[in-house]
Image 1 (cartoon, rainbow, N blue to C red):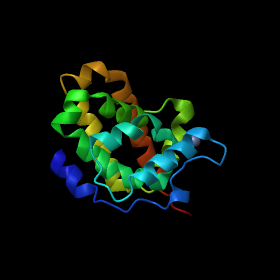
Image 2 (cartoon, rainbow, N blue to C red):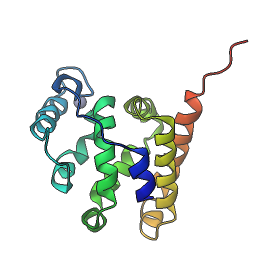
Image 3 (cartoon, rainbow, N blue to C red):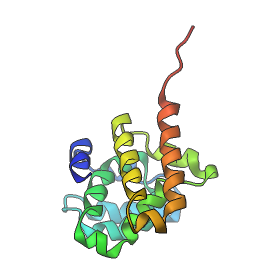
Amino acid sequence: MANEIEQAFPFVDMPSFAEIPNHDQGCHECSQLAEDVDAIRGRPIGGEEIRQLHQELSHLSAKSWQWLLPHYLRYCATPEAEYNKFETEFLLYSLSPLERFEGDANNRLKFITDSQIQTLLNLLRCFSTDEYWGKYCSAELQRGISFLKKVLVGRRVPRSE
Ligand SMILES: [Zn+2]
């Protein structure tokens, strides 16, 4: 799985300051987060940086997600993440939205390619057979798998007559 992630998610540059937040001006979490993200610009992204952001993933724009996911996914495979677990848990939650948040979650994946979505699907399937995650987050993983499938289906443009 780590290899597949490595292949599927090359690093991309952090978006400009203005492109970091997900919501309009006036969202306090977004403005705070944009400052925090901008402050780590150019730094290697590891556990410390991920922990700063992991609870605020819904306030990150689609461009920010495109930038953060390659770092985040690689981090989830480290012994540090396997020990802490909660950063991985928050990522799983972000990928398994409740029905009313599916639109938001779909928008955040706008710049994630179809084959990257496929890799995320494979990852969730892999987690669902994991001794810990398969039990602890079973419902979320099932929801995430059907959500990502729906994302892929939604991207197939119907043929015009
Ligand atoms: Zn926000």
